[in-house]
Length: 513
Image 1 (cartoon, rainbow, N blue to C red):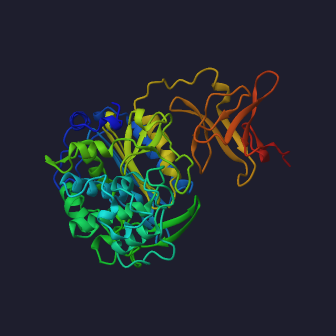
Image 2: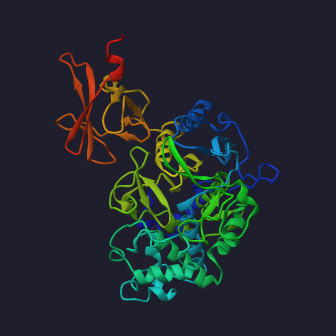
Protein backbone atom coordinates (compact mmCIF):
# COMPACT_ATOMS: atom_id res chain seq x y z
CA UNK A 1 0.00 0.00 0.00
CA UNK A 2 1.24 3.50 -0.82
CA UNK A 3 0.53 6.15 1.80
CA UNK A 4 1.03 9.69 0.50
CA UNK A 5 -0.59 13.10 0.77
CA UNK A 6 -3.34 12.02 -1.58
CA UNK A 7 -4.27 9.28 0.88
CA UNK A 8 -6.21 11.54 3.18
CA UNK A 9 -9.54 10.27 2.03
CA UNK A 10 -12.07 8.12 3.77
CA UNK A 11 -11.65 5.22 1.36
CA UNK A 12 -7.95 4.90 2.17
CA UNK A 13 -8.53 5.22 5.88
CA UNK A 14 -11.20 2.52 5.75
CA UNK A 15 -8.71 0.30 3.92
CA UNK A 16 -6.23 0.85 6.74
CA UNK A 17 -8.83 -0.09 9.33
CA UNK A 18 -10.00 -3.16 7.44
CA UNK A 19 -6.76 -4.58 6.10
CA UNK A 20 -4.04 -3.47 8.49
CA UNK A 21 -5.19 -6.09 10.95
CA UNK A 22 -8.46 -6.79 12.64
CA UNK A 23 -9.78 -5.40 15.92
CA UNK A 24 -7.56 -5.86 18.96
CA UNK A 25 -8.83 -8.53 21.31
CA UNK A 26 -8.43 -7.66 25.00
CA UNK A 27 -7.84 -10.67 27.23
CA UNK A 28 -8.76 -10.98 30.88
CA UNK A 29 -6.73 -9.16 33.52
CA UNK A 30 -5.78 -12.53 34.96
CA UNK A 31 -3.72 -13.24 31.84
CA UNK A 32 -0.98 -10.82 32.88
CA UNK A 33 -3.30 -7.92 32.06
CA UNK A 34 -2.25 -8.50 28.45
CA UNK A 35 -4.17 -7.86 25.27
CA UNK A 36 -1.90 -10.38 23.57
CA UNK A 37 -2.13 -13.97 24.89
CA UNK A 38 0.98 -16.14 24.89
CA UNK A 39 1.66 -18.51 22.00
CA UNK A 40 4.65 -20.39 20.64
CA UNK A 41 6.55 -18.75 17.78
CA UNK A 42 5.94 -21.77 15.53
CA UNK A 43 2.17 -21.53 16.00
CA UNK A 44 2.35 -18.03 14.50
CA UNK A 45 4.58 -18.95 11.60
CA UNK A 46 7.86 -17.76 13.13
CA UNK A 47 10.78 -20.07 13.82
CA UNK A 48 11.95 -20.36 17.41
CA UNK A 49 15.50 -19.81 16.13
CA UNK A 50 14.54 -16.42 14.70
CA UNK A 51 13.00 -15.29 17.97
CA UNK A 52 16.00 -16.54 19.95
CA UNK A 53 18.33 -14.63 17.65
CA UNK A 54 16.62 -11.34 18.50
CA UNK A 55 16.68 -12.24 22.19
CA UNK A 56 20.33 -13.25 21.92
CA UNK A 57 21.15 -9.84 20.50
CA UNK A 58 19.72 -8.11 23.57
CA UNK A 59 21.51 -10.54 25.89
CA UNK A 60 24.75 -9.60 24.15
CA UNK A 61 24.03 -5.91 24.74
CA UNK A 62 23.95 -6.60 28.49
CA UNK A 63 27.02 -8.80 28.34
CA UNK A 64 29.18 -6.24 26.54
CA UNK A 65 27.86 -3.26 28.50
CA UNK A 66 25.92 -1.66 25.65
CA UNK A 67 22.96 -1.42 28.07
CA UNK A 68 22.45 -1.91 31.81
CA UNK A 69 19.21 -3.82 31.39
CA UNK A 70 16.25 -4.22 29.08
CA UNK A 71 12.88 -5.77 28.28
CA UNK A 72 11.89 -7.25 24.93
CA UNK A 73 8.36 -8.03 23.73
CA UNK A 74 7.56 -9.61 20.36
CA UNK A 75 3.91 -9.92 19.29
CA UNK A 76 2.93 -11.80 16.14
CA UNK A 77 -0.68 -12.07 14.96
CA UNK A 78 -1.69 -10.44 18.26
CA UNK A 79 -0.02 -13.26 20.20
CA UNK A 80 2.97 -12.82 22.50
CA UNK A 81 5.72 -15.06 21.14
CA UNK A 82 8.49 -13.66 23.34
CA UNK A 83 8.52 -11.52 26.48
CA UNK A 84 11.84 -11.50 28.33
CA UNK A 85 13.97 -9.29 30.55
CA UNK A 86 17.73 -8.92 30.70
CA UNK A 87 20.29 -7.37 33.03
CA UNK A 88 19.47 -5.06 35.91
CA UNK A 89 16.83 -2.50 36.72
CA UNK A 90 19.30 -0.83 39.08
CA UNK A 91 22.95 -1.86 38.87
CA UNK A 92 24.18 -0.25 42.10
CA UNK A 93 21.37 -1.69 44.20
CA UNK A 94 21.66 -5.03 42.37
CA UNK A 95 17.98 -5.11 41.44
CA UNK A 96 17.43 -7.38 38.48
CA UNK A 97 15.19 -6.37 35.62
CA UNK A 98 11.68 -7.76 36.04
CA UNK A 99 8.90 -8.20 33.54
CA UNK A 100 6.61 -5.15 33.31
CA UNK A 101 9.24 -2.82 34.68
CA UNK A 102 8.17 0.76 34.02
CA UNK A 103 10.45 2.91 31.84
CA UNK A 104 10.84 6.62 31.16
CA UNK A 105 9.90 6.52 27.48
CA UNK A 106 10.81 10.15 26.75
CA UNK A 107 9.81 11.08 23.17
CA UNK A 108 7.47 8.12 22.90
CA UNK A 109 5.13 10.53 24.70
CA UNK A 110 4.77 12.56 21.49
CA UNK A 111 2.49 10.09 19.66
CA UNK A 112 -0.01 10.23 22.54
CA UNK A 113 0.09 14.02 22.45
CA UNK A 114 -0.58 13.84 18.73
CA UNK A 115 -3.54 11.51 19.25
CA UNK A 116 -4.94 13.88 21.89
CA UNK A 117 -4.83 16.74 19.36
CA UNK A 118 -6.47 14.55 16.70
CA UNK A 119 -9.27 13.65 19.09
CA UNK A 120 -10.11 17.33 19.53
CA UNK A 121 -9.99 17.77 15.75
CA UNK A 122 -12.39 14.83 15.36
CA UNK A 123 -14.78 16.60 17.73
CA UNK A 124 -14.61 19.86 15.77
CA UNK A 125 -12.99 21.70 18.67
CA UNK A 126 -9.98 22.68 16.56
CA UNK A 127 -8.74 22.54 12.98
CA UNK A 128 -5.23 21.38 12.18
CA UNK A 129 -4.69 24.48 10.06
CA UNK A 130 -5.68 26.76 12.94
CA UNK A 131 -2.95 29.17 14.06
CA UNK A 132 -1.64 28.21 17.49
CA UNK A 133 -2.16 31.85 18.50
CA UNK A 134 -5.92 31.22 18.39
CA UNK A 135 -5.53 29.17 21.58
CA UNK A 136 -2.23 30.28 23.15
CA UNK A 137 -1.77 34.03 23.68
CA UNK A 138 2.01 33.65 23.85
CA UNK A 139 2.00 32.81 20.13
CA UNK A 140 0.19 36.02 19.18
CA UNK A 141 3.43 37.75 18.17
CA UNK A 142 4.87 38.79 14.83
CA UNK A 143 7.31 35.84 15.01
CA UNK A 144 4.90 33.08 16.04
CA UNK A 145 1.44 33.98 14.80
CA UNK A 146 1.89 32.09 11.51
CA UNK A 147 2.60 28.74 13.21
CA UNK A 148 -0.25 26.23 12.83
CA UNK A 149 -1.22 23.28 14.99
CA UNK A 150 -0.43 20.93 12.11
CA UNK A 151 3.10 22.31 11.91
CA UNK A 152 3.57 21.53 15.62
CA UNK A 153 2.57 17.91 15.02
CA UNK A 154 4.81 17.59 11.95
CA UNK A 155 7.87 19.31 13.51
CA UNK A 156 7.70 21.93 10.79
CA UNK A 157 6.93 24.91 13.05
CA UNK A 158 10.48 26.24 13.01
CA UNK A 159 10.54 26.16 16.82
CA UNK A 160 13.79 25.12 18.55
CA UNK A 161 14.54 21.69 19.95
CA UNK A 162 13.97 23.00 23.48
CA UNK A 163 13.74 26.18 25.51
CA UNK A 164 14.67 24.45 28.79
CA UNK A 165 18.03 26.06 29.53
CA UNK A 166 18.30 26.42 33.30
CA UNK A 167 16.55 23.53 35.02
CA UNK A 168 13.65 21.19 34.40
CA UNK A 169 11.27 23.17 36.62
CA UNK A 170 12.09 26.67 35.38
CA UNK A 171 8.40 27.16 34.47
CA UNK A 172 5.48 26.86 36.88
CA UNK A 173 3.23 24.84 34.56
CA UNK A 174 2.78 23.86 30.93
CA UNK A 175 0.86 27.02 30.05
CA UNK A 176 3.72 29.18 31.32
CA UNK A 177 6.16 27.03 29.38
CA UNK A 178 4.10 27.34 26.19
CA UNK A 179 3.88 31.13 26.65
CA UNK A 180 7.67 31.29 26.75
CA UNK A 181 7.92 29.08 23.66
CA UNK A 182 5.65 31.39 21.68
CA UNK A 183 7.45 34.50 22.85
CA UNK A 184 10.83 33.06 21.91
CA UNK A 185 9.47 32.22 18.49
CA UNK A 186 10.73 30.05 15.64
CA UNK A 187 14.32 29.65 14.49
CA UNK A 188 13.18 29.06 10.93
CA UNK A 189 10.26 30.15 8.80
CA UNK A 190 7.23 28.00 9.80
CA UNK A 191 6.65 25.29 7.22
CA UNK A 192 10.14 25.71 5.71
CA UNK A 193 11.61 22.41 6.84
CA UNK A 194 11.55 19.57 9.36
CA UNK A 195 13.23 20.50 12.64
CA UNK A 196 12.64 18.15 15.55
CA UNK A 197 11.15 20.21 18.36
CA UNK A 198 10.30 19.29 21.92
CA UNK A 199 9.17 22.89 22.32
CA UNK A 200 6.61 22.47 19.54
CA UNK A 201 5.33 19.24 21.08
CA UNK A 202 4.90 20.94 24.45
CA UNK A 203 2.97 23.74 22.76
CA UNK A 204 0.68 21.14 21.15
CA UNK A 205 -0.07 19.70 24.60
CA UNK A 206 -0.78 23.20 25.91
CA UNK A 207 -3.37 23.63 23.14
CA UNK A 208 -5.06 20.42 24.35
CA UNK A 209 -5.09 21.80 27.89
CA UNK A 210 -6.53 25.15 26.84
CA UNK A 211 -9.36 23.62 24.78
CA UNK A 212 -10.23 20.72 27.10
CA UNK A 213 -9.94 22.65 30.34
CA UNK A 214 -7.83 19.93 31.94
CA UNK A 215 -4.14 19.06 32.13
CA UNK A 216 -2.55 17.00 29.38
CA UNK A 217 -1.86 14.06 31.71
CA UNK A 218 -5.49 13.90 32.83
CA UNK A 219 -6.78 14.21 29.26
CA UNK A 220 -4.50 11.42 28.01
CA UNK A 221 -5.35 9.19 30.97
CA UNK A 222 -9.12 9.57 30.51
CA UNK A 223 -9.28 9.55 26.72
CA UNK A 224 -6.44 7.19 25.74
CA UNK A 225 -4.87 5.20 28.57
CA UNK A 226 -8.05 4.05 30.30
CA UNK A 227 -9.93 3.01 27.12
CA UNK A 228 -6.87 1.06 25.96
CA UNK A 229 -6.34 -0.62 29.34
CA UNK A 230 -2.85 0.90 29.70
CA UNK A 231 -2.85 0.58 33.48
CA UNK A 232 0.94 0.83 33.81
CA UNK A 233 1.32 4.03 31.80
CA UNK A 234 1.28 7.41 33.52
CA UNK A 235 2.95 10.80 33.92
CA UNK A 236 5.14 10.76 37.02
CA UNK A 237 5.52 14.25 38.45
CA UNK A 238 5.09 15.59 41.99
CA UNK A 239 2.19 13.37 42.95
CA UNK A 240 3.11 10.11 44.63
CA UNK A 241 2.22 6.99 42.70
CA UNK A 242 2.47 3.41 43.99
CA UNK A 243 3.80 2.34 40.58
CA UNK A 244 6.88 4.52 41.10
CA UNK A 245 8.76 1.69 42.83
CA UNK A 246 8.61 -0.33 39.60
CA UNK A 247 10.34 2.37 37.53
CA UNK A 248 13.84 1.58 36.27
CA UNK A 249 16.69 3.80 37.37
CA UNK A 250 18.14 5.98 34.61
CA UNK A 251 21.71 5.81 33.31
CA UNK A 252 23.73 8.02 31.00
CA UNK A 253 27.21 7.57 29.56
CA UNK A 254 28.38 5.13 26.94
CA UNK A 255 28.69 1.36 26.58
CA UNK A 256 30.56 0.00 29.59
CA UNK A 257 30.65 3.44 31.26
CA UNK A 258 27.18 3.95 32.65
CA UNK A 259 26.42 6.35 35.51
CA UNK A 260 23.13 6.31 37.37
CA UNK A 261 21.57 9.79 37.32
CA UNK A 262 18.09 9.11 38.66
CA UNK A 263 16.45 6.43 40.78
CA UNK A 264 12.80 5.97 41.76
CA UNK A 265 13.52 6.74 45.41
CA UNK A 266 14.53 10.27 44.49
CA UNK A 267 12.54 13.34 43.56
CA UNK A 268 10.35 13.09 40.44
CA UNK A 269 12.37 13.62 37.28
CA UNK A 270 9.81 16.02 35.74
CA UNK A 271 7.98 18.91 37.46
CA UNK A 272 4.71 18.41 35.54
CA UNK A 273 3.41 16.68 32.41
CA UNK A 274 4.76 17.89 29.06
CA UNK A 275 3.73 17.00 25.53
CA UNK A 276 7.21 16.08 24.33
CA UNK A 277 8.10 13.62 27.09
CA UNK A 278 7.35 12.81 30.78
CA UNK A 279 5.36 9.61 30.06
CA UNK A 280 6.28 6.33 31.77
CA UNK A 281 5.17 3.01 30.31
CA UNK A 282 5.86 -0.69 29.81
CA UNK A 283 6.42 -2.63 26.58
CA UNK A 284 3.11 -4.47 27.02
CA UNK A 285 1.19 -1.21 27.49
CA UNK A 286 2.82 0.58 24.59
CA UNK A 287 1.98 -2.32 22.30
CA UNK A 288 -1.69 -1.63 23.05
CA UNK A 289 -1.22 1.94 21.86
CA UNK A 290 0.42 0.87 18.58
CA UNK A 291 -2.43 -1.60 18.06
CA UNK A 292 -4.82 1.38 18.09
CA UNK A 293 -3.06 2.73 15.00
CA UNK A 294 -2.95 -0.70 13.38
CA UNK A 295 -6.68 -1.13 13.96
CA UNK A 296 -7.65 2.14 12.31
CA UNK A 297 -8.52 3.97 15.53
CA UNK A 298 -10.68 1.23 17.04
CA UNK A 299 -10.01 -0.45 20.40
CA UNK A 300 -12.21 -3.17 21.92
CA UNK A 301 -14.91 -2.40 19.38
CA UNK A 302 -15.01 1.31 20.26
CA UNK A 303 -13.80 4.02 17.91
CA UNK A 304 -11.34 6.39 19.58
CA UNK A 305 -10.01 8.06 16.43
CA UNK A 306 -11.58 8.75 13.06
CA UNK A 307 -10.39 7.20 9.83
CA UNK A 308 -9.16 10.63 8.74
CA UNK A 309 -7.12 11.04 11.92
CA UNK A 310 -5.35 7.71 11.41
CA UNK A 311 -4.64 8.62 7.80
CA UNK A 312 -3.11 11.94 8.91
CA UNK A 313 -0.91 10.18 11.47
CA UNK A 314 0.35 7.56 9.01
CA UNK A 315 1.04 9.92 6.10
CA UNK A 316 4.75 10.75 5.57
CA UNK A 317 5.37 14.49 5.50
CA UNK A 318 9.15 14.95 5.83
CA UNK A 319 12.31 12.85 5.72
CA UNK A 320 13.30 12.66 9.38
CA UNK A 321 16.47 14.52 10.35
CA UNK A 322 18.77 14.23 13.34
CA UNK A 323 18.09 16.22 16.50
CA UNK A 324 19.47 19.74 16.27
CA UNK A 325 20.82 19.54 12.72
CA UNK A 326 19.88 18.72 9.15
CA UNK A 327 21.79 15.44 9.01
CA UNK A 328 19.94 12.18 8.32
CA UNK A 329 18.32 10.39 11.24
CA UNK A 330 20.03 7.02 11.69
CA UNK A 331 18.04 3.94 10.81
CA UNK A 332 18.85 0.25 11.13
CA UNK A 333 16.31 -0.93 8.56
CA UNK A 334 18.27 -1.52 5.37
CA UNK A 335 16.67 -0.07 2.27
CA UNK A 336 14.29 2.11 4.28
CA UNK A 337 14.39 5.69 5.48
CA UNK A 338 12.75 7.19 8.56
CA UNK A 339 10.09 9.74 7.66
CA UNK A 340 7.90 11.78 9.98
CA UNK A 341 4.15 12.09 9.84
CA UNK A 342 2.15 13.70 12.64
CA UNK A 343 3.91 12.73 15.86
CA UNK A 344 4.84 9.43 14.21
CA UNK A 345 8.00 7.86 12.85
CA UNK A 346 7.27 6.12 9.56
CA UNK A 347 9.74 3.77 7.87
CA UNK A 348 9.62 3.55 4.09
CA UNK A 349 11.89 3.15 1.05
CA UNK A 350 12.60 6.20 -1.07
CA UNK A 351 13.51 9.79 -0.34
CA UNK A 352 10.25 11.54 -1.26
CA UNK A 353 7.50 11.41 1.40
CA UNK A 354 4.85 12.00 -1.26
CA UNK A 355 5.88 8.91 -3.22
CA UNK A 356 6.77 6.19 -0.78
CA UNK A 357 5.29 3.11 0.82
CA UNK A 358 5.13 2.90 4.61
CA UNK A 359 6.35 -0.48 5.88
CA UNK A 360 6.52 0.24 9.62
CA UNK A 361 5.63 2.91 12.15
CA UNK A 362 6.17 3.76 15.80
CA UNK A 363 8.49 6.01 17.78
CA UNK A 364 11.59 5.87 19.96
CA UNK A 365 12.81 7.63 23.09
CA UNK A 366 16.24 8.98 23.96
CA UNK A 367 16.57 6.96 27.16
CA UNK A 368 16.85 3.81 25.05
CA UNK A 369 13.27 2.80 24.28
CA UNK A 370 11.72 1.90 20.96
CA UNK A 371 8.55 0.36 19.52
CA UNK A 372 7.69 -0.66 15.97
CA UNK A 373 4.57 -1.97 14.25
CA UNK A 374 4.77 -3.83 10.92
CA UNK A 375 1.22 -4.02 9.56
CA UNK A 376 1.89 -6.36 6.63
CA UNK A 377 3.60 -8.78 9.00
CA UNK A 378 1.02 -8.38 11.80
CA UNK A 379 4.02 -7.81 14.03
CA UNK A 380 4.76 -5.51 16.98
CA UNK A 381 8.17 -5.30 18.67
CA UNK A 382 8.80 -3.27 21.82
CA UNK A 383 12.32 -2.97 23.21
CA UNK A 384 12.83 -0.83 26.33
CA UNK A 385 16.03 -0.06 28.20
CA UNK A 386 17.01 2.62 30.71
CA UNK A 387 20.49 3.27 29.25
CA UNK A 388 20.40 6.72 27.63
CA UNK A 389 21.34 6.05 24.02
CA UNK A 390 19.67 4.88 20.85
CA UNK A 391 22.58 2.80 19.58
CA UNK A 392 21.17 -0.55 20.68
CA UNK A 393 17.68 0.41 19.47
CA UNK A 394 18.96 1.15 15.97
CA UNK A 395 21.18 -1.94 15.95
CA UNK A 396 18.19 -4.07 16.91
CA UNK A 397 16.25 -2.74 13.92
CA UNK A 398 18.70 -4.51 11.62
CA UNK A 399 18.26 -7.83 13.43
CA UNK A 400 14.47 -7.47 13.46
CA UNK A 401 14.51 -6.92 9.72
CA UNK A 402 16.98 -9.71 9.12
CA UNK A 403 15.14 -12.46 10.97
CA UNK A 404 11.50 -11.46 11.53
CA UNK A 405 10.43 -9.73 8.32
CA UNK A 406 9.72 -11.30 4.97
CA UNK A 407 12.52 -10.55 2.56
CA UNK A 408 12.42 -10.46 -1.19
CA UNK A 409 16.08 -11.41 -1.56
CA UNK A 410 17.60 -14.73 -0.59
CA UNK A 411 19.93 -15.16 2.40
CA UNK A 412 22.63 -16.69 0.23
CA UNK A 413 25.72 -14.54 -0.01
CA UNK A 414 26.61 -13.68 -3.63
CA UNK A 415 29.87 -15.31 -4.69
CA UNK A 416 31.55 -11.96 -5.41
CA UNK A 417 30.95 -10.81 -1.83
CA UNK A 418 32.11 -13.93 -0.01
CA UNK A 419 35.84 -12.99 -0.07
CA UNK A 420 35.05 -9.68 1.64
CA UNK A 421 33.13 -11.08 4.60
CA UNK A 422 35.16 -11.53 7.76
CA UNK A 423 36.86 -9.83 10.71
CA UNK A 424 39.17 -6.83 10.45
CA UNK A 425 40.98 -5.24 13.41
CA UNK A 426 40.92 -1.50 14.06
CA UNK A 427 43.72 0.38 15.82
CA UNK A 428 42.91 4.07 15.60
CA UNK A 429 41.16 6.64 17.77
CA UNK A 430 39.29 4.86 20.56
CA UNK A 431 39.74 1.43 18.97
CA UNK A 432 42.46 -0.94 20.19
CA UNK A 433 42.49 -4.25 18.35
CA UNK A 434 38.74 -3.87 17.98
CA UNK A 435 37.13 -6.39 15.62
CA UNK A 436 35.09 -4.80 12.83
CA UNK A 437 32.91 -7.33 11.05
CA UNK A 438 32.05 -7.21 7.36
CA UNK A 439 28.75 -9.10 7.23
CA UNK A 440 25.87 -9.89 4.88
CA UNK A 441 22.68 -8.67 6.55
CA UNK A 442 19.20 -8.13 5.13
CA UNK A 443 20.51 -9.00 1.67
CA UNK A 444 23.17 -6.28 1.80
CA UNK A 445 26.87 -5.99 2.52
CA UNK A 446 27.42 -4.15 5.80
CA UNK A 447 30.08 -3.13 8.32
CA UNK A 448 29.35 -3.96 11.95
CA UNK A 449 31.26 -1.57 14.23
CA UNK A 450 31.12 -2.66 17.89
CA UNK A 451 29.37 -0.22 20.24
CA UNK A 452 28.07 1.62 17.18
CA UNK A 453 25.82 0.44 14.35
CA UNK A 454 25.62 -2.07 11.53
CA UNK A 455 26.26 0.22 8.54
CA UNK A 456 24.78 -0.75 5.20
CA UNK A 457 27.31 -0.33 2.38
CA UNK A 458 26.54 0.89 -1.13
CA UNK A 459 27.73 -0.65 -4.36
CA UNK A 460 31.40 0.18 -5.10
CA UNK A 461 32.25 3.29 -7.10
CA UNK A 462 34.86 3.36 -9.85
CA UNK A 463 37.61 3.53 -7.22
CA UNK A 464 36.24 0.48 -5.42
CA UNK A 465 34.93 2.47 -2.45
CA UNK A 466 31.64 1.52 -0.82
CA UNK A 467 29.96 4.47 0.87
CA UNK A 468 28.03 4.14 4.10
CA UNK A 469 24.39 4.44 3.04
CA UNK A 470 23.69 6.48 6.19
CA UNK A 471 26.32 9.10 5.31
CA UNK A 472 28.52 9.74 2.29
CA UNK A 473 31.29 11.05 4.59
CA UNK A 474 32.55 7.53 5.29
CA UNK A 475 33.47 4.70 2.93
CA UNK A 476 35.40 1.44 2.88
CA UNK A 477 37.53 -0.31 0.31
CA UNK A 478 39.47 -3.58 0.37
CA UNK A 479 43.21 -4.10 -0.01
CA UNK A 480 44.12 -7.25 -1.98
CA UNK A 481 47.32 -9.03 -2.93
CA UNK A 482 48.34 -9.81 -6.49
CA UNK A 483 46.30 -13.01 -6.37
CA UNK A 484 43.11 -11.21 -5.32
CA UNK A 485 43.19 -12.32 -1.68
CA UNK A 486 41.69 -9.74 0.67
CA UNK A 487 44.36 -8.56 3.14
CA UNK A 488 42.74 -5.59 4.83
CA UNK A 489 39.80 -3.25 4.98
CA UNK A 490 40.53 0.43 4.45
CA UNK A 491 38.24 2.93 6.18
CA UNK A 492 38.06 6.35 4.53
CA UNK A 493 36.77 9.25 6.59
CA UNK A 494 37.33 13.03 6.66
CA UNK A 495 40.19 12.86 4.18
CA UNK A 496 42.01 10.19 6.18
CA UNK A 497 42.38 6.45 5.64
CA UNK A 498 42.85 3.70 8.22
CA UNK A 499 43.97 0.20 7.34
CA UNK A 500 42.42 -2.68 9.28
CA UNK A 501 44.30 -5.97 8.81
CA UNK A 502 42.25 -9.10 8.37
CA UNK A 503 41.77 -11.98 10.79
CA UNK A 504 44.52 -11.27 13.35
CA UNK A 505 44.78 -8.44 15.88
CA UNK A 506 48.13 -6.66 16.04
CA UNK A 507 49.10 -8.31 19.34
CA UNK A 508 48.66 -11.73 17.80
CA UNK A 509 51.15 -10.87 15.09
CA UNK A 510 53.93 -10.02 17.53
CA UNK A 511 56.61 -12.64 18.14
CA UNK A 512 55.83 -14.92 21.04
CA UNK A 513 58.40 -15.03 23.90
